[in-house]
Length: 547
Ligand SMILES: O=P(O)(O)OC[C@H]1O[C@H](O[C@H]2O[C@H](CO)[C@@H](O)[C@H](O)[C@H]2O)[C@H](O)[C@@H](O)[C@@H]1O
Image (tube, rainbow, N blue to C red; front, side):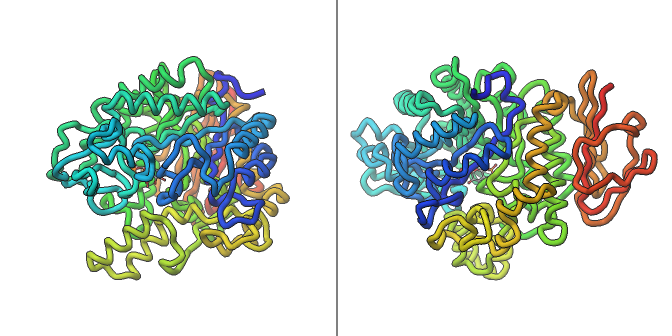
């Protein structure tokens, strides 16, 4: 039996980056068969949905976020039969599969673009052309417009120049996209993650941006809600589908509408504001510690701002972000404690938790030392751009080591064998050297591991209604090391206490919680004296009582 629509708010999603997951065939990149072979492991974690990052045919300039055929599986991942087998095997284990839908742009290798370069082709209007470029900047560096010799015009690409933005103003394009989504839905896919979907509607006057990189003219743009409502009616309505939009540089107000409880657009949204607390002055490519007070403030604002109105996708990690234990925890002596603390803090919040492959065993950044270790188009473009601007290579590398998307893309660490059990072949990107200590085999065998902590958190969400419905309140906005919050319903009360640092600190429990039960903790006991709790390095405790 698969989950019913009434259950989705209690579910957990696991994100798979197939290229780095597993290759039983001994290839340099992971495959769909690799995912199928690991389904029992995923089911044992207790998750409900598997989100696969793009596996469609693609030249792989942006690891599949540059789709050249939405109806075909990229041969590096296998065949459509492999995909169908994965769906069938997942369903047997009560796991639903979510596809990544990348329709802000497509590859310049897509037939639409190849034909659309000809101004007389009906596909010309599937893209965004200008005789003169604006000053908008690509999110991967350099100008957002490139000249096409055949068309004799500039086309827009908010990402790499091989990722041409699609023209959503064109109803024929929209119809083609909805049909493609219906194809996957009718195959048995149970959800969609929509890549940078809040960028699809551009200000049609295409103005220059006097103060920025152009994003104000295409982020949460003029017709984006109309398009999502149309998509909902054409693809989602009447079907049991999980839908989540990736919202780049968005606002709370827009997300309240995208994922409003009336479900006219999507079920939930990802936003990234909490993952920019280590971008000093908004600059991603500067190595810097994170701002803890900002982290609490931003996540709390989104908890309070969405509750009762809309729904958050909650997450620390994905394929674009550094590993959270290296980022907001301690990936050396307190790796296990801090990985569990971060998990408890996140899983106590309202929303749907997303777990990115390897997070559940506390995988860390690999700490690569050379530029040649990196593969990501954003990282490599950035390096060239900064060098051209005269920045010192060591300084750029320090930022890359902390921030590169490749931190999340090293192969999944399955066991202590060659290449961490990922494949017999040399992987497309190096394995993190700590795989002999940090791997699935060891984590599953140890009842105190990060893996078993995640498993318990996933179970608690299904068991305690307060985790789904409880109202959120931040108790320690100004505390420099503790994030304490409560969640309450009419008859339940939950208190989550987390120490984000390695120094001991104390917290005085509210009177009502002094004899509360402990649902989950990351030390063998709770150091409690009356209402005073001593929180050891990276300690986290979840208290619970009925009222
Ligand atoms: O940081 P934001 O402006 O809030 O944007 C969020 C993420 O957007 C982009 O990610 C997604 O689209 C890319 C192009 O398809 C793709 O390369 C990426 O893998 C997708 O997840 C951006 O690339 C990310 O860095 C941002 O975090």
